[in-house]
Each structure stands twice: as C-alpha cells, then as structure tokens.
Length: 446
Image (cartoon, helix red, strand yellow):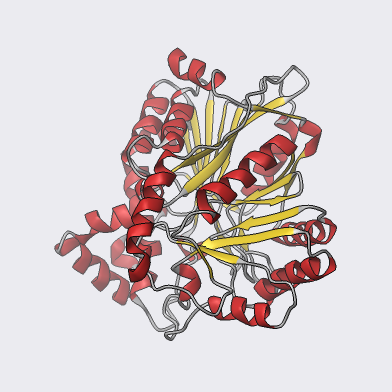
C-alpha cells in the first residue's frame, strides 16, 4: 500500500493556488459561469464535450461563442464533440442528421465561423466515444462531466446533477489546450462539422484507427512544478483503451492508497472488475467506503411505467440489479457501517455525478463513469488534486454535503426492488437478456 501512496506523491504535477480553485454547486450556476467566461474571453475558448445539443441551451451557448467571435475575430475558438453523437438524433427519436445541422446553420449566417470538430474515437459509436471533458477559456479550466443541453444546464424546469469545478491556472490551461489542438484537432481523422462538406465515417476508416492509436500514446505535456505548503498539486490525466491506460491505473492506485475513507460517486452502478476488487480490499483493511449512486428513476434512460416502454429503458433496472447484488454480498459491511450506500433522487431530475475522494487528501474530478465502457472503450480524462495541507477540505466538504442533500441511506439490500416487482415489459426484457447471456456483453458496453 505504501508503494501506491509513494507513486501518487511522485506523479508529475502543477502547483495550484487553492484560492483559485472554486466548486460550483448547481447546474444553473455552472451555466451562468460558462456564459460569463465566454463573454469575458480575451485569447482562447476551447470547449470539449460529448455533445452540444440543438436545443435552447445549446443554441444559447453557440450564440455566445459566435457573438464573441464577431466581436473579436482574433479570438481562438474551437468546439470538440463526438463525431458520431453529433450526426444522429436522440436515442429513440426519428432519423435525423443530428446537431451538425445547427452547426452548419450558424456558420452560414455569420462572417466569422466557429469550428465544431467531430472527434471519431472509434468507427462506431457503440465501441467508443469522446468522453474527454474540460473547457479552457483563457487561463481558466472549467471542468464538469456535463454536456451542453437544456437538462445539463438546467435551462428550464429540470436538471441533470453533475460536479462543476473552476481552476484558474495558466500552466494547466496551456497543457489541456495543447492536447486538444495537437492530439485531436490537428489529426487527419478530425473534421469540422460546421462546414457544408464532410467525409463519411467509412471514408476516414483508416484515419480513425490511426487517431485511436495516437491517442493511446498521448499524454498531457507540462513542466512539473512542486507545490509548496500554501498550494495544492493538480495533475491532468488522460486514458483510452485497456492497455497502458494511465487514468485506469491512477484510479486503481488511488483506491489502493486509502487508509481511512473513500467517497465515490457514479451514475451507472457497474464497476470494472479492478475497481470492485480495490473496494473489496479497502473494506477488508477497515477503510470506510461511501458510495453515492442515482436511484433508477434518476437515471437519464429511465422511462416511467405510464409511458411506452423502449428497450433502452431497461438500463436503469440493470444497474439496480448490479447494485442489489453488490449490497447483498456486502450486507455485513453495511450493517457494521463500514460501507455506506446512498441513492440520489430529487423530483424528476437526474443524476450524472462521478468522482473519488480519498482520505480528504486526494480528489479526482472526472467525467469517467467508473464502468467497463469508460475502462476500455471511451476517451476519458481527469484532474487529480493532491491537498497535503488541507487547503480544500472546507470546499470539498461543502460539495459532498450538497451531493448528499437529496439522498436516501440503504440500510439493507432488501430496500432495493427485486426483478419480480419491476414492470412486466422490464421483467420480460431482463429475462430474455439473462437467458441468452447477453448481460455479460452488455456490462462491457454500458
């Protein structure tokens, strides 16, 4: 265990002024912060997200970007979204060209364009997407797992709850911006979706393979800068694929380093084997483990029993089945209060939080869902924070308190519904999946 702890202290890092690291506590605050930052930008704006939706919130963000570009044509603006996700409609919706239509429309109406780059992490969306996060605006990094649309930005009545962090740090911003520019935008597989002409996925098949290969070798580049006792250390980490994935390794090491407590948030309860193993080991050595996961009704794929059922609506129930099995296997740890599981639910809103806190000393802010898909298919990143002098304890404790506000404690696995109590269409789907053993394959893709 000491070897793991030493490995963390030897990670290359950037010194961070703790007073210039802020934690936002709501989706609406996050939206307002992004808009204000865009309006005040002087030199660059790089936005990276899974998608920028063609809805009111998405159009507002794109309008702000275009206004900033018209006001200051020299402003370096680039948006990166997933290639596949940008060129289809919502799951279950009618066939469409997706959000790319909006990008082209905006480009046609303005003198100075804002490129929206489609990043094809894999030839097919099911086998990997752009899940990298982070907005770089001048010398500030705004980091969240949230994408850009109505629900993520709480544009109307509902919101999708996430984590939101703001780090003012020129070295960190430069490192993350350089990665986006050199490892993603400059690659031949990447195309501007705001342009009228673009290749088909089939036409860039070879380039996509090359891009994935280069991304698997890529790292955030920066000159290491040791923190003094008045600072904290931050390390940006990127990873893709199963082999030599630095982010996966760092997450496992982070869990293995825990002496006193681990706090984990995940929206989709489906831990990779190595994460489940480290949690089991931590419990055995007496570490207190707290896990916050969204209730199945707070899952973004949940379909109310009153609505027409679609296959995708079975996912929240699959995650709850995983959680029930995990809780049952660890009933003794729950009873002894070494393991605490809490379900988040707030009205009709949904839950998208992810992250890890260890011993009030290490904090991982990430878009990684801590599931097999993130572990082997998607392009993921994170910022690891090392706080050896307790500068950020108050801020992160306030964040945790905010997360726990709408949670319910699971005192026994019996509180979680059994399959027999699920709606009939869900029961039929789950039985079919189990009968053909498709659940094993699904677990690797979800």
